[in-house]
Length: 231
Image (cartoon, rainbow, N blue to C red; front, side):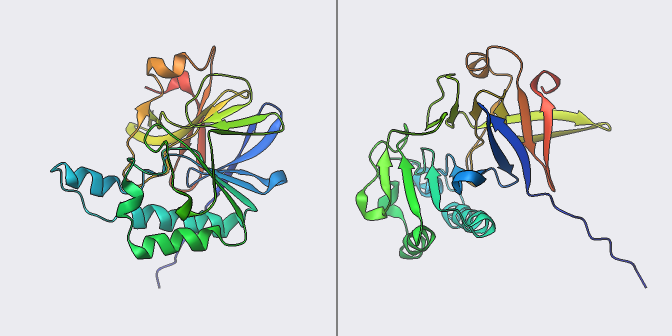
């Protein structure tokens, strides 16, 4: 008989920003338990169809995959409020290309909870027919949620799609990550087809005045590693 070894999964890791205790979810979402608030960033829905329209063919399943992952994390935390932190749609017309099934999924995820779309550079005008409310930014206590990071204290933003590469035991691994220094954070992109920007890029140096930490999304837990150790 072959013994089976069960590998435990730790879906969330502590992440403190401006004195507020948050949880970095393994999916790339952020959960504020006290407020029953779930935050996701850069869904980039319909990126596949956007590329196809320009002649670059990608499998047209990114929206369904992204919404499926979002449904899972919502089921795990059952938030009272969801904030989608900008670039939820890959372009200004992406919402017109949603299938009826994907529209229904979005509607079901909004049931019994408040839903806030933060406008991003890819989707500055989100139609009301998708439900929820649209805002340029949202402030709750000492935390401000916006799409593009400014480096302000208490800011949680997206836009940059942070990723980090590390070496361990002779192997190299590159993963999406949260970038944070205790005063501000940049969230990883949640979308299935969303790319990433290395945390060693100058864009992050302009946001974080000193050292910061990369919270990498691993296979079974979030790994917190000093950005200076990443490459």
